[in-house]
Amino acid sequence: MKYDVTVIGAGGGGYPGAFRLAKSGYNVLMADPKGELGGNCLYSGCVPSKTVREMAQLIWRINRVLKQESKVNFERIQDHKDFVQETRFRQHKRELSEYSTITFYKGVIRIKDPNHVIIKTEDKEIEAETKYMIIASGSEPFKPQFPGNEYCITSDDLYSYKTSLRKLPQDMVIIGGGYIAIETASIFNILGVKTHLLVRGDRVLRGFEDEIVNTLLPIIKLDIIYNAPVLEVRKIKEDEFEVIYSSKDGAKKSIRTNLVLLATGRKPVLPEGIENTGIALDKRGYIVVDNAMRTNLPGVFATGDVNGKAPYFHAAVRMSIAAAYNIMANGSPIDYVDYKSIPVTIYSVPSASYVGIMPSEAKRMGIDIMEATYNMEDEVMAQMYDEREGMLKLIFEKGSLRLIGAWMVGVHSQYLINELGQAVLHGLTAKQLASFADQHPSTNEIIAYAARKVL
Image 1 (cartoon, helix red, strand yellow):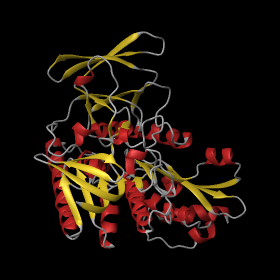
Image 2: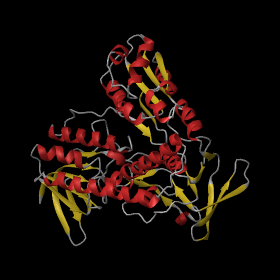
Image 3: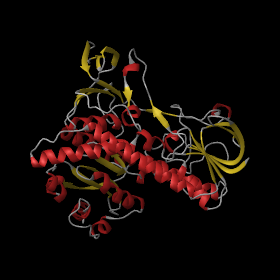
Image 4: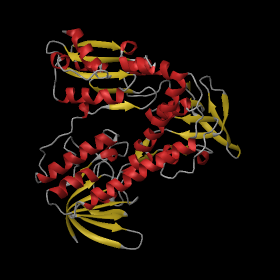
């Protein structure tokens, strides 16, 4: 069998590019071991975790504003999460059916060489020839090795479709300090679970601007134990564990808990046979690509989590589309991914978001900047929800007053940051931001309010 393009994986880095190519008449082979479109994001990542977050925040807001105590039915929350996943699985099946030139398999693709693959399904193996290839095989949770790590769950276990975890624990230990750890701790904290974070180093959210972290942490009020590498997890009895860790002074300490979550980062899932291709990997094991998504092998592209550039679904979609356009240009780059314009959000409660160049980075780059801020205590939606902590910061290039970055902690930051991402991408100025009339009442109004401060 011959195909124009083979797509390995049907998540955000895979199916959007496949759809774009099929729309232009390309014959596309695509396979995914789950047999569904959406990847980890839909099966056990962003969609289910944010569904739980939205339900948790809804209950928390009602209780907080109306000064009442609504009982949390976590099983119902998980049922709704499953419903959302089912709805989107069906939606993607409908979308796939609209493209007659896509052949989709539930299975694993093994690479023989850049132009030949083997599709391994449950009952057969099929050989295929391909001109181009998009590797979008994703990532999976990294599980550090220590005694008792088999007693720990990951976010995949917590949020997977039809998960067996349907009752809230009283107490929960989260090992790790990245965005998944912070989000999960914040969500379960407002659901009434006593959460503890054990962090190996002396800070959380590495890679995020210090000012963002220092604004967020006092608001979400998490129990974080720093410089606390985990030594062992012991099972005491069913649903009771002891987590033993080393304190800063070297002494052994422990916490008893009902659930232990590993949130210690992710690692790439590389396709079978990739070791025989000569494809370049970085020191972390991710596939090396340029901004056009090209690998070192002609005709082979790598998109999404597997290249380690930006581990977010929306970033994977952007990469997938770029790869498709570059294939349509006969492998010559015409579309490049601008990572600085891709927004990032920590979905804690409240959320924290950023896009573009941060002040510390601008200083390293020798860019003179002007900053404009707006405090959430004066924002109308924050007042409605009585969640008036946080702030917005806009970062402008001095002289041109072109927006080069922004960050926000507070109500609706995950929505507002998208508008600012567009502004960064298209080089909008403070005057242009100030001249747009966002609807009232909406959190987005504060963009113009802040921009006017530098005019």
